[in-house]
Length: 347
Image: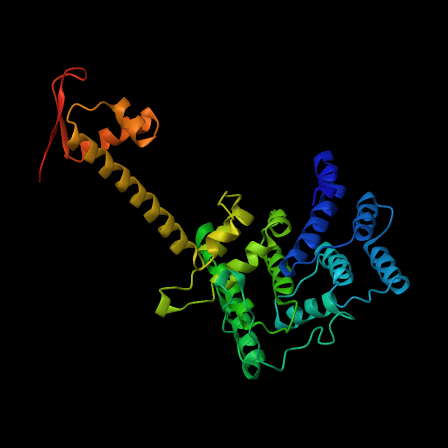
């Protein structure tokens, strides 16, 4: 993503705007673990410089892959290159209609000639193993209800009034809407990238002209994981759906807030891991305290220096442990530090 920083630093409005679009387009490929080629990067720079149009970028990419067909089915660089160019084209256009047809059209334009189902509603049920869910899947809408569910969600959003809402309430509402839209998963593949583009265009329609699309460029995987966590629950394990992470992402995106966007914190086992680590630290701390107390019981004139040597801990740690024992009411110092002794307080 550093390929375009020079244009953003230079401050030329036209070039900077194009660079932002390309950063977003390329960054969104990370949603599916894809990385565009250096050839695409070079063509994108030519477009930013004004030497060629986005349409010419698309033509160059098409021509390149006709001459250099990819035989490895696992190599999806061609998809990453073509979809990046198409996203850049869509984001550069000042057009949008908030409708199911627009949503389908975006998917068709992004994945035409890449997926046979480009722009088509899936006719089969799906599951997807998610890292953030430790291999479990979100329950997606059934194939039989897709178009009706999509129509309903879009229509309800059209009717919604933002009047009187503060910015945070607006973000919370949009987080709920977009998580529901994504969960329908109307497309077999390319669902998150399509939803992201639809969302960016929707923001513009709502008047958010200064959307920080760098977040889509740099945290697209976080965006997807946040959508997953907003739609998954397992009450038997105490796991609840939460839009908290999605709201953090959108608050950074629209309001310039600075929430930490760390993927591992969304993992369903993260809380258990942190709790286990904290419990381990507490147990270790309690063990050291008990050992210090034992040494004091054995020798009520023992010094902090002797304790640090006996337990092979630093002098500052030994003093801190003694202080903890004093504050917890387990020991009391009688007399001075040099000539006094410790009194064990039995409870």
